[in-house]
Length: 92
Image (cartoon, rainbow, N blue to C red; front, side):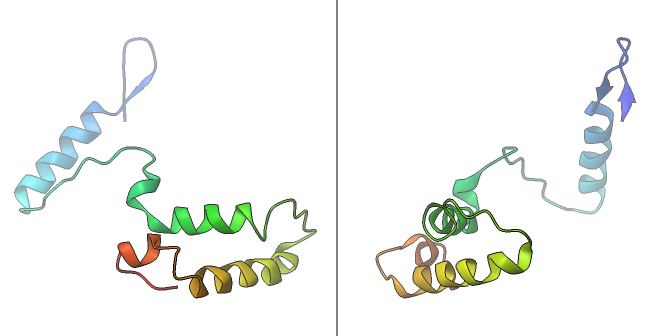
């Protein structure tokens, strides 16, 4: 990234190069928000599991998270009223 006069990094030059490369190679560049959980259905799955099986879990390591995470994903898979995966055309 190029630096501005104040010393901050400015991504405008990098963005201009990306758009030029996209134009040359006939690519479509889509601007997305920095954080868009509505566009990423797995965010809703994790939010659901974190609010249930992983709520108040203080695991010593990743292995200790395996069982509650597995229970949560199994519950989400079995509950047909949780439509956020089906709506996105995904399965778990």
